[in-house]
Amino acid sequence: MPYGEAAKVRQHCDVLLAPYQKTVGVSGNRGNTAQWMSPLKIFEYMSSGKPIICSNIPVLKEVLRNQENALLCEPDDAGDWVRALVKLKEDRELGKKLANNALIDFNNNHTWVKRAELVLEGLVL
Image (cartoon, rainbow, N blue to C red; front, side, top):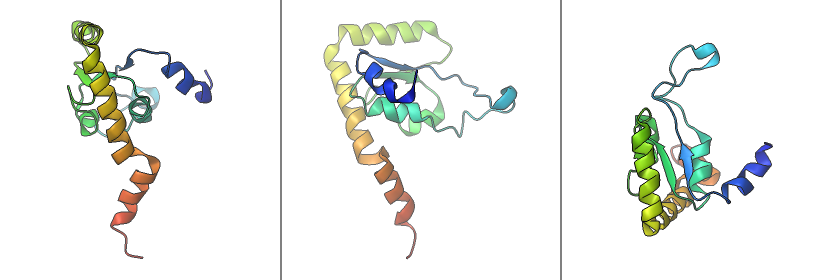
């Protein structure tokens, strides 16, 4: 789908999933970039106001905190993902809390303006 339509589609979702694997390959599955990747999809999800379920891998834990602004699951444990979905279905208040905390974190720390401010903070002009 065209990128511009993705935000509209996200708004029709109850929960947003980010099932990243422990190993993330680059062109031709050479190398593993899982420890350095910066998936923009996570920031888009945070800005959506929807609860997030994401893979529990170290690089993503720099932004997402389990039970605070997302639910983190083991990438290769389908049962863990099912339990997280059921938890959000049964506890709507938890979903609202996670979504709200993610949105606040996004607005306070991860917008393009906030990221630029962080980069420029250490520069002497």
